[in-house]
Image (cartoon, rainbow, N blue to C red; front, top):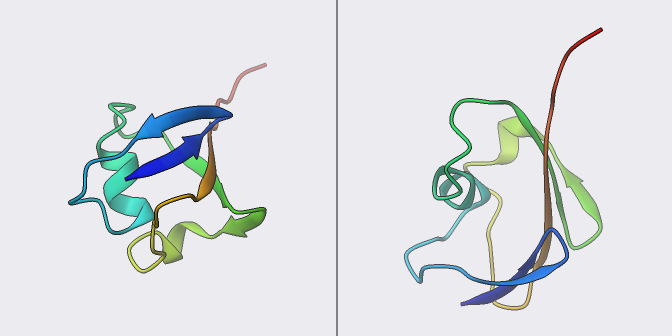
Length: 67
């Protein structure tokens, strides 16, 4: 399945059905993230239910704290 991930073409595994599964495959560990799918914010509590479909435009932003 082809999606646009953070502005670049990305070939997601066909077994990826949800935002949660997509994030798990990105190798970013347990770091919290913000996600936007097709211009709409996706709440963390919705990651397990939010679908990922061919052609989606997804932005994943890692949250970093510091001072």
